[in-house]
Every structure is written in C-alpha cells, then in structure tokens.
Length: 336
Image 1 (tube, helix red, strand yellow):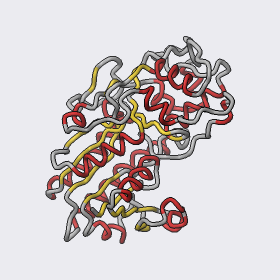
Image 2: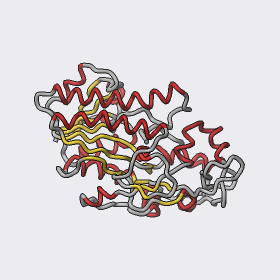
Image 3: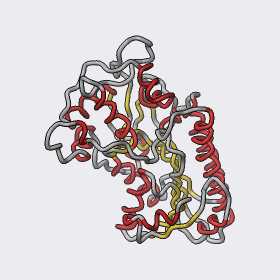
C-alpha cells in the first residue's frame, strides 16, 4: 500500500512511517524540509516530497496514485508559548493543511481510498467527570473549536467517495517527547519530586490532580492508525485513547514510581504552571475521561491497556541512580 503522510517526521509520524515500512508498505512523506529529512538516517529509505501542506503546490500531485492518506500535520501545541499569533498557527496549520489535502484527493486521477485524519480529544472540551465516547458533543474552548474546524475540513473528502476516519488522539506517551517531554522536567524542578498537576482552577490551592487524563502509548496510537487504514469499517470519529484513563494524581504517582522519584501529595498551583508554560498549561491542568469505544468495537486489541504497563515499557531501563538529570529533555513532536 502506498501511503501519503503529512506530519511524517513528528512524534506519531516517525513511528507510523517505521511500522508501515516494516510491514512492506510504501510511506510517501510530505515535508517542508525534504533535504534535511533525506539526511536523517532513520528516514533514509523513504520517499520524500518537498512541500508545505498549508499552501497548495506541486506536492499535491504526489497524492495521485497513493492508496491512502494519513494527515498528521499541525503546529506542535507544546512548542512555544501561546499568543494570538501562535494560536492562529495552531489552527491554520491544521485547517489549511487539511483543505489542501482534500483538494489534492479531489484532483487525483487515481484517488486514495481512505483519508485517516488526525484530530484530538480536545474536541470534547473539558467536562470534568463525564465519560466521553465518539458520540459525545464538542466543547467550546479554543482547542475544541480548532478540532471541530479541523474535522469539518476533512469531511469534504466523503463527497469524493473517499472513506474518512477521524482519530481523536489523547495524551500520547513517549519518553522525552510530547506530554512526557513537558511533565518530566516539571517533576525535575519541583523540589518534592513528582507531583500532581491541576487543581480545578483555584488560584491559591496547591494542585491535587483530580482531573482525568486520557492517555495512550505511542505503539497503540500507531496501531489504531493502522487499523483505520486497513479496516473498511473504520470511518467517522475513533478515539485514540487507552481503555483505562486515570486521574492526574494517579498518573503522577505511577510516573514517579517509574522514574524512581518521590511523589508529593500535592503540586504547584495552576497559576504557577501557567506562569511557566503559558496558556498551554490548561491542556495539562484540565482533562477529560475519554473511552475508545469505537476502536474496541472494531476489534483493536491494546498492547498497553493500563498505565503501569505503558510506563514500564517506555522507561524499561531504570536509571543507574535515581537522578532526574538523566531524563531526556523535551523534543518536538506533534501532540494534541
């Protein structure tokens, strides 16, 4: 299968590209920095197309003749402090990129049979205790609106007879990247070791981490993307989260244990985190309880259904001494 991929060099993209190549598929990667990607030893055998998904261009013709498209492109929400300009970039990179991909599919003589479109559980907003499935309504905060517009842009592909699967990705766990890339250093500088994050918005109260966290191991989100590519029944929204969401405080304890760090009973107040991280702190301090109803119904079997198994697998080698300095710093990767 020839698979055209945007965002192929991001956190999820790299893993997907590797898995596709391992099983004999041909990943075709769109990149704004094609030469750089070609020099990357882990990407060497892949087909790289030069282009920016947010602007139409000659790259769109490369979609013709591909069997499938996976759209993972979008400005990394953890990359820089949010301001009006960064928020615009977060939105436009997703919406315009999708518009241009749909246009490319529309122009193709041999159009792809399926578009696997990335979205995020941010779609649901942050209702505190509700169990959320693919049927749940969308929220009204910034990320919910972005996800809704992102998905709406993709829906136009259905009129072209292309199957559409929308993967609403949760908090992807990968060592040193994405959310763990942000949280692990916080656990380093907080003097008591690891700590819960998020307290329901009180200005002065320390964090108790009662909010839900819908996480997924990197291997399982790739597994769900492959299921969406392969299974003709996979269409519409599919939650990319593990079947056992946990409260942030449980997550913090489990991560502390895995990192050989103590875990404080409470953490820094939300405003402190906001001072350090900016508005993106809300993505970590507020949460949702999202269940992968559709993935399970389609027969997906999770490799890491529980947080303990996921973290153990990610941090399989315990540090020689429990020094937090050994934890890799955050790198960039697409996360929603």
